[in-house]
Length: 225
Image 1: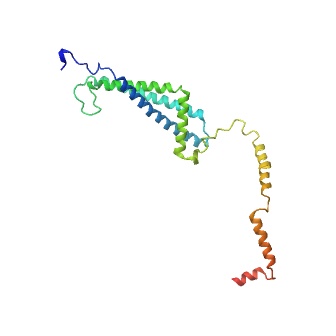
Image 2: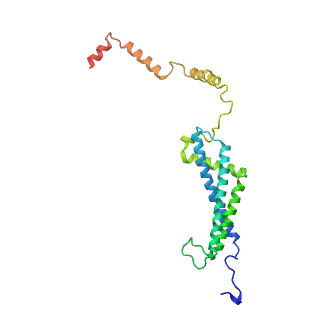
Image 3: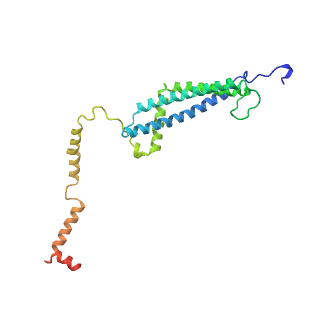
Protein backbone atom coordinates (compact mmCIF):
# COMPACT_ATOMS: atom_id res chain seq x y z
CA UNK A 1 0.00 0.00 0.00
CA UNK A 2 1.40 3.39 -0.96
CA UNK A 3 1.75 5.99 1.79
CA UNK A 4 -0.27 9.22 1.62
CA UNK A 5 -2.06 7.98 -1.46
CA UNK A 6 1.13 7.84 -3.60
CA UNK A 7 1.55 4.71 -5.64
CA UNK A 8 4.96 3.04 -5.58
CA UNK A 9 6.80 2.64 -8.84
CA UNK A 10 6.06 -0.46 -10.84
CA UNK A 11 9.08 -2.65 -11.68
CA UNK A 12 8.75 -1.56 -15.29
CA UNK A 13 9.26 2.04 -14.21
CA UNK A 14 12.26 1.56 -11.93
CA UNK A 15 15.61 2.50 -13.49
CA UNK A 16 18.46 0.05 -13.91
CA UNK A 17 21.28 0.29 -11.36
CA UNK A 18 24.27 1.53 -13.33
CA UNK A 19 26.63 0.20 -10.66
CA UNK A 20 25.23 -3.32 -10.98
CA UNK A 21 25.21 -3.04 -14.75
CA UNK A 22 28.86 -2.00 -14.93
CA UNK A 23 29.90 -4.80 -12.60
CA UNK A 24 27.99 -7.35 -14.67
CA UNK A 25 29.52 -6.08 -17.93
CA UNK A 26 33.05 -6.11 -16.49
CA UNK A 27 32.64 -9.65 -15.18
CA UNK A 28 31.16 -10.78 -18.47
CA UNK A 29 34.06 -9.26 -20.37
CA UNK A 30 36.63 -11.13 -18.27
CA UNK A 31 34.78 -14.40 -18.86
CA UNK A 32 34.53 -13.71 -22.59
CA UNK A 33 38.21 -12.81 -22.80
CA UNK A 34 39.19 -16.10 -21.16
CA UNK A 35 36.94 -17.98 -23.58
CA UNK A 36 38.56 -16.24 -26.57
CA UNK A 37 42.03 -17.19 -25.31
CA UNK A 38 40.99 -20.84 -25.11
CA UNK A 39 39.42 -20.78 -28.58
CA UNK A 40 42.48 -19.16 -30.18
CA UNK A 41 44.82 -21.57 -28.35
CA UNK A 42 42.90 -24.47 -29.87
CA UNK A 43 43.31 -22.93 -33.31
CA UNK A 44 47.05 -22.48 -32.74
CA UNK A 45 47.37 -26.13 -31.77
CA UNK A 46 45.44 -27.27 -34.83
CA UNK A 47 47.40 -25.03 -37.19
CA UNK A 48 50.77 -25.99 -35.70
CA UNK A 49 50.07 -29.68 -36.19
CA UNK A 50 48.91 -29.06 -39.74
CA UNK A 51 51.78 -26.70 -40.63
CA UNK A 52 54.57 -28.73 -39.00
CA UNK A 53 54.87 -26.51 -35.95
CA UNK A 54 55.12 -23.13 -37.65
CA UNK A 55 53.44 -20.28 -35.78
CA UNK A 56 51.97 -17.36 -37.70
CA UNK A 57 51.10 -14.38 -35.51
CA UNK A 58 48.98 -12.75 -38.22
CA UNK A 59 46.84 -15.88 -38.60
CA UNK A 60 46.35 -16.09 -34.84
CA UNK A 61 45.44 -12.39 -34.70
CA UNK A 62 42.78 -12.86 -37.37
CA UNK A 63 41.43 -15.85 -35.45
CA UNK A 64 41.21 -13.63 -32.38
CA UNK A 65 39.14 -11.04 -34.23
CA UNK A 66 36.84 -13.74 -35.55
CA UNK A 67 36.30 -15.15 -32.06
CA UNK A 68 35.61 -11.70 -30.63
CA UNK A 69 32.98 -11.07 -33.29
CA UNK A 70 31.45 -14.51 -32.81
CA UNK A 71 31.10 -13.94 -29.09
CA UNK A 72 29.68 -10.46 -29.69
CA UNK A 73 27.00 -12.00 -31.89
CA UNK A 74 26.22 -14.51 -29.16
CA UNK A 75 25.72 -11.66 -26.70
CA UNK A 76 23.35 -9.92 -29.12
CA UNK A 77 21.41 -13.15 -29.42
CA UNK A 78 21.14 -13.32 -25.63
CA UNK A 79 19.93 -9.71 -25.53
CA UNK A 80 17.22 -10.55 -28.04
CA UNK A 81 16.20 -13.54 -25.93
CA UNK A 82 15.87 -11.26 -22.89
CA UNK A 83 13.59 -8.94 -24.86
CA UNK A 84 11.37 -11.83 -25.82
CA UNK A 85 11.21 -13.07 -22.23
CA UNK A 86 10.37 -9.58 -21.00
CA UNK A 87 7.52 -9.21 -23.47
CA UNK A 88 5.92 -12.34 -22.00
CA UNK A 89 6.88 -11.79 -18.36
CA UNK A 90 5.40 -8.29 -18.21
CA UNK A 91 1.96 -9.83 -18.69
CA UNK A 92 2.42 -12.31 -15.85
CA UNK A 93 1.68 -11.26 -12.28
CA UNK A 94 2.12 -13.01 -8.97
CA UNK A 95 5.05 -15.04 -7.66
CA UNK A 96 7.37 -17.14 -9.77
CA UNK A 97 7.07 -20.92 -9.51
CA UNK A 98 10.76 -21.48 -10.33
CA UNK A 99 13.84 -19.45 -11.24
CA UNK A 100 12.99 -19.36 -14.95
CA UNK A 101 9.36 -18.46 -14.40
CA UNK A 102 9.71 -14.71 -14.93
CA UNK A 103 6.93 -12.34 -13.92
CA UNK A 104 6.21 -8.64 -14.13
CA UNK A 105 8.21 -8.08 -10.95
CA UNK A 106 11.35 -9.38 -12.70
CA UNK A 107 11.33 -6.60 -15.28
CA UNK A 108 14.27 -4.70 -13.78
CA UNK A 109 16.35 -7.87 -13.64
CA UNK A 110 15.54 -8.72 -17.25
CA UNK A 111 16.25 -5.19 -18.48
CA UNK A 112 19.57 -5.25 -16.66
CA UNK A 113 20.56 -8.49 -18.37
CA UNK A 114 19.45 -7.19 -21.74
CA UNK A 115 21.55 -4.05 -21.31
CA UNK A 116 24.47 -6.15 -20.08
CA UNK A 117 24.45 -8.34 -23.18
CA UNK A 118 24.13 -5.35 -25.50
CA UNK A 119 27.00 -3.45 -23.89
CA UNK A 120 29.20 -6.52 -23.77
CA UNK A 121 28.59 -7.18 -27.47
CA UNK A 122 29.60 -3.61 -28.30
CA UNK A 123 32.71 -3.88 -26.14
CA UNK A 124 33.83 -7.15 -27.74
CA UNK A 125 33.38 -5.81 -31.27
CA UNK A 126 35.25 -2.64 -30.37
CA UNK A 127 38.21 -4.67 -29.12
CA UNK A 128 38.62 -6.22 -32.56
CA UNK A 129 40.19 -2.93 -33.70
CA UNK A 130 42.47 -2.70 -30.65
CA UNK A 131 45.76 -4.12 -31.93
CA UNK A 132 47.35 -4.15 -28.49
CA UNK A 133 44.45 -6.13 -27.05
CA UNK A 134 44.49 -8.58 -29.97
CA UNK A 135 48.25 -9.12 -29.62
CA UNK A 136 47.80 -9.78 -25.91
CA UNK A 137 45.20 -12.44 -26.65
CA UNK A 138 47.55 -14.08 -29.17
CA UNK A 139 50.44 -14.22 -26.70
CA UNK A 140 48.21 -15.63 -23.95
CA UNK A 141 46.77 -18.20 -26.36
CA UNK A 142 50.22 -19.27 -27.53
CA UNK A 143 51.35 -19.75 -23.93
CA UNK A 144 48.26 -21.83 -23.24
CA UNK A 145 48.98 -23.95 -26.32
CA UNK A 146 52.43 -24.69 -24.88
CA UNK A 147 50.89 -25.81 -21.61
CA UNK A 148 48.18 -27.90 -23.26
CA UNK A 149 50.23 -30.10 -25.58
CA UNK A 150 53.75 -29.72 -24.22
CA UNK A 151 57.04 -28.67 -25.72
CA UNK A 152 57.41 -31.91 -27.70
CA UNK A 153 54.78 -30.76 -30.18
CA UNK A 154 54.86 -26.97 -30.08
CA UNK A 155 58.33 -26.35 -28.72
CA UNK A 156 59.16 -24.36 -31.83
CA UNK A 157 56.19 -22.01 -31.57
CA UNK A 158 58.22 -19.50 -29.59
CA UNK A 159 60.85 -19.02 -32.27
CA UNK A 160 60.01 -20.86 -35.47
CA UNK A 161 58.64 -18.85 -38.35
CA UNK A 162 57.49 -19.92 -41.76
CA UNK A 163 60.47 -20.07 -44.20
CA UNK A 164 60.88 -17.09 -46.45
CA UNK A 165 59.98 -17.35 -50.12
CA UNK A 166 63.66 -17.58 -51.14
CA UNK A 167 64.55 -20.24 -48.57
CA UNK A 168 65.09 -23.01 -51.14
CA UNK A 169 67.36 -20.81 -53.27
CA UNK A 170 70.95 -21.66 -52.44
CA UNK A 171 69.95 -24.31 -49.89
CA UNK A 172 72.26 -26.95 -51.41
CA UNK A 173 75.17 -24.52 -51.38
CA UNK A 174 74.57 -23.72 -47.72
CA UNK A 175 74.50 -27.41 -46.83
CA UNK A 176 77.71 -28.03 -48.77
CA UNK A 177 79.37 -25.09 -47.03
CA UNK A 178 78.45 -26.59 -43.69
CA UNK A 179 79.98 -29.91 -44.73
CA UNK A 180 83.16 -28.28 -46.03
CA UNK A 181 83.75 -25.90 -43.13
CA UNK A 182 82.04 -27.13 -39.99
CA UNK A 183 82.65 -30.83 -40.47
CA UNK A 184 86.23 -30.17 -41.56
CA UNK A 185 86.84 -28.25 -38.37
CA UNK A 186 85.30 -31.10 -36.39
CA UNK A 187 87.59 -33.65 -38.04
CA UNK A 188 90.59 -31.44 -37.31
CA UNK A 189 89.72 -31.37 -33.62
CA UNK A 190 89.14 -35.12 -33.51
CA UNK A 191 91.45 -36.87 -36.03
CA UNK A 192 90.69 -40.44 -37.02
CA UNK A 193 92.58 -42.86 -34.78
CA UNK A 194 93.01 -40.42 -31.91
CA UNK A 195 89.99 -41.48 -29.90
CA UNK A 196 89.94 -43.73 -26.83
CA UNK A 197 89.00 -46.79 -28.88
CA UNK A 198 92.07 -46.37 -31.04
CA UNK A 199 94.32 -46.25 -27.96
CA UNK A 200 92.70 -49.39 -26.58
CA UNK A 201 93.22 -51.18 -29.90
CA UNK A 202 96.91 -50.22 -29.88
CA UNK A 203 97.36 -51.47 -26.32
CA UNK A 204 95.66 -54.75 -27.17
CA UNK A 205 97.93 -55.23 -30.16
CA UNK A 206 101.04 -54.54 -28.06
CA UNK A 207 99.94 -56.96 -25.36
CA UNK A 208 99.30 -59.63 -27.92
CA UNK A 209 102.77 -59.20 -29.44
CA UNK A 210 104.61 -59.38 -26.11
CA UNK A 211 102.76 -62.49 -24.96
CA UNK A 212 103.11 -64.41 -28.25
CA UNK A 213 104.47 -67.88 -27.40
CA UNK A 214 103.75 -69.46 -30.73
CA UNK A 215 100.48 -70.96 -29.56
CA UNK A 216 97.56 -70.78 -31.94
CA UNK A 217 94.71 -68.75 -30.48
CA UNK A 218 92.22 -71.26 -31.82
CA UNK A 219 94.00 -74.01 -29.88
CA UNK A 220 93.81 -71.95 -26.74
CA UNK A 221 90.10 -71.48 -27.18
CA UNK A 222 89.66 -75.19 -27.73
CA UNK A 223 91.62 -75.96 -24.59
CA UNK A 224 89.51 -73.56 -22.53
CA UNK A 225 86.32 -75.05 -23.86
